[in-house]
View 1 (cartoon, rainbow, N blue to C red):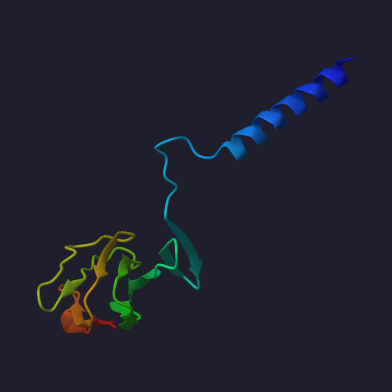
View 2 (view 1 turned 45 degrees about the vertical axis):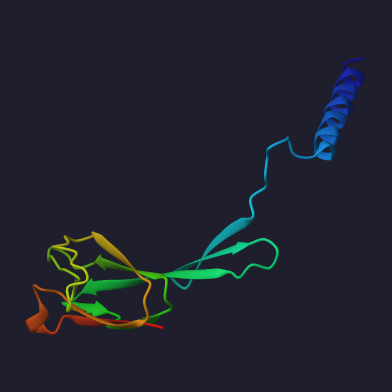
Length: 145
C-alpha cells in the first residue's frame, strides 16, 4: 500500500513539474540574453561573454607574472586588449613592486604571496619595473594587441 501511495505522489509531482515547464515564464520575467563561461587552460583563465541572437563574443584573459629571483617571469608578455595581468610576489622574505615607467600604476610594496592586478584596455606597449630592484634588472613589458 505504501509503495502505491509513493508512486502516486511521484506521478503527481511530475505532473506539476510538467505543467510548470509548459506554462512558460511568469509575466514580467525576461530570460538572460547573455552568458559567461570561464575556464582555465595552462594557467591562463579565460572568460567569454556572449549575447543571444548572434551578438559578438568578448574574450578576456588573466595572465599571471611571477616575481622571483629579482626578476619578473615572464619579463615580456603579449595579451589582447581587455585582459588583466596579475603579478604575484613569489620570493620569500623580499618585497617587490610593479610600477609603470610612465606612472599608470604602482602596486606599492608587495610582501611574499601578495598580488596586484590591472586590466589593460588600450593597445600599446607598457614598460614597468620593481622600484626596489630596478637597478638589478627587475624590469618587464606588457604588450597589448
